[in-house]
Length: 273
Image 1 (tube, helix red, strand yellow):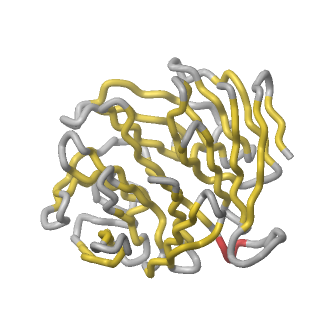
Image 2 (cartoon, one colour):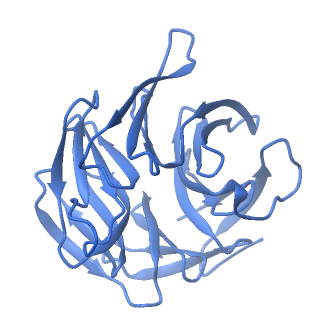
């Protein structure tokens, strides 16, 4: 169920939603995943919920209501930030004294426009938000910054000539912004200064990026594979799953977890990358 080039890797698949078999179709699209303390957190876009899965038992332990969740990030202290794309909102969930997550705040602002991804900076204590926009029809900025309590929002970065910012992540104090039109990545510092840019050819339609053992993992919508990139952003390996629609990855305990645009399964990859 997995193919790769020159990678020593094994894969396990586990299903959720009380099913022991694969559920096909777009009704269960998962567009983002995050991980913390033995749990993974999935954005179920069309089911309007975030589900929390215990990795040891492979079962759902909690679901959180949020309309059209498309992006999620979790702080080291366990706060959950999630983007509600259709509502133009950012939701904040916190744990109570018993470790149970509850919604603490929904925040809207006129400069949010189809938010699809969020990334929290512990260094700056700021949340960066990716707007999914086409510049011809929208004068919003690509990246918005908000304080940790979601009280104040301000424009952070805009890239002329690029559209459809789909994902944002922070690795080693650098912000990686993944654009689908044209397919590219813009790298920023946290003072909003552009420090690098990677342009892909037409064979790549990038959805998300992650960082694992000095390699970047880039999901490619066009070929349904995960590209393993070196620090020069050259493809060194391809991970091909029993799937045509991997959307995002999460890293925990030296394993890679992959979610899909359709289905109810999660790939758990073990590799010696």
